[in-house]
Length: 601
Image 1: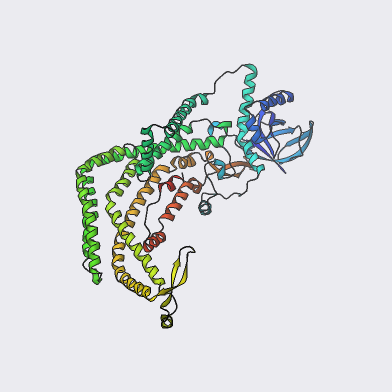
Image 2: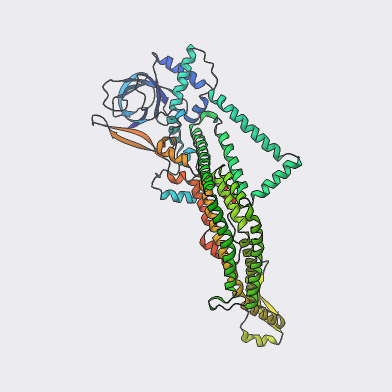
């Protein structure tokens, strides 16, 4: 039994046309009197320039036969009586007649109905998630998340070329009918109308080209001012989240200009992707501005409360509490007997750094209302700008903790490596053999081979062994004191990183959340299809069944694929095991580079 794909909205008599490879797919019906007229009209359309891209994707259409519709239909879908002019033998469960050279013979076939989506509606069929041109399923984390996504429908991993050609024919059937109607009108009247879409978007294209030329001119300019400004911008981008947010917003504005440019060859999938990207970016910017303006009003109404919280958080908590902890550690806390001299040196040195920072902070206190005004001004450009300014303020006003942490981690790292090097001194043969080797004034130990990255045996003199023993004893007695102060500032650094990571996560959420894609998935899933399925329903009389092709909505895992990649990078960088390992091994804890976040979007 062969399958015939028939459009749901075609229910008129005439000569039906379409494709017979890889399956019999009917695109429409021509209401003409003779077969020669229908064939000549279709040949003129096939030779036109506009239809070449369609023919390349779907194949050359031709007249397949003649159909007649009965007025006593018992189905919600069209049920034609057809006769086929040429082609292989087919079969049908309804009254379908196929003939070669108009020789009619009774056969049987199964009708499968599909929707002819208009190109301007941006609806289309797709065999899988890759058909949207928006998402890449090569990532292992994304593929594993699809297995646990209830909204994802499994499909074949390797999509055949035959199935893709059939999907292209369904998507292009309405466009082919529009080409034929245009050709029919052109026979009676000469149509001279400009392409409205290209006229509407020409000014946006010109603006985009001017912006690109300006950027290229600045990058290649020999003007000292532009070169210095470009250098400052690139250098400050590595440290300031505000500068990075300005760059991100400029990139979104350019994406908006790119979204109004016409798509070559009229590919509905590319147009749909461009449409979703354009309006998702627009919604993100508008929602960002709306929430930012609301935050601005909130900051204005509660200015004094925010000033009080700001002073309390940074002066009382970040200065006085740290001083109290340092004094507590210097007085043998909980019976922990630290080295008195080293503990006092640590305590006084760190309190001196904190006091130096506190004097600078008291100088800035009169300017805090101006900083809050700047925060209100930044909120007018969006809540993301306010979050970026808060990130920079956290970095600036926690600089004393960062400085103390860098000093403590440097001392701890050097002391840890020194202890590891001295430990190699005693990893030779047992000391019971040292008396035998003492006659040669050598004792076998080990040392690290930097070139081969391994530990090799080595003979040490007695003087070297004595010096190593003294140094190892000093390290062993001083290490607990260094460790205690290091753990204090490492804990404070981890807490600061967690706050910073939370702000960056909220910033990424506001910058890249697919709000419009989710709304479109609920409102019109056929604009973002994630696969196809066959819907079977009984006919009106209940004597048969109707089969139609419908689209699955795009799965949530694919919609949030950028967040899957972003979460993978954030989880890898801020993984608890990684943080604990960096703390114990004396490595410097840092925040995730912003380039890792921007490269996922």
